[in-house]
Image 1 (spheres, helix red, strand yellow):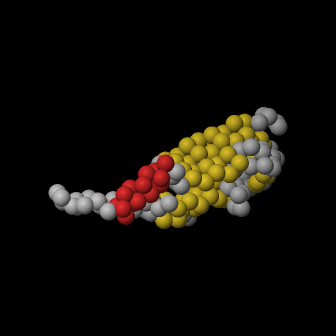
Image 2 (spheres, one colour):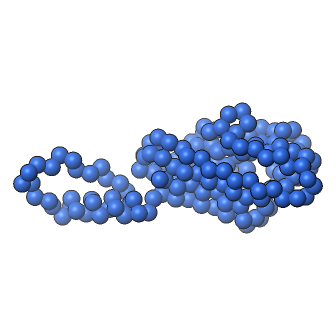
Length: 161
């Protein structure tokens, strides 16, 4: 279903046609079922690098078609160090533009051996135009030789609100 801008120039005595009511029904269905995309990891993902890049360019890149407005983005998962102590920075890229500053939206210090660390964040992306939008989960470490392991069952999702 797609959103149709409702008629707002009604005049007294104007009859309501079946097509008018169908538009209202389609708009209600669109509001009930907003554009949503979700991915839950099924395997370990191991990455190394000191520049922001896609955490998993195949699966953690989500595309939705919106009616225009705001989108809520969420990520949660468990990570551990891959090589040595590491500060991990996370960000999201929306249509080619990262949302955070030089160090992304959030970070976590991963310093205790193979111990898993939980990382989670939400981001409200406001004012998107109607149409297709791609959301990419990105990360970077502090040094090129350091990396992380993202464990299975991490979730990345986007939903128009």
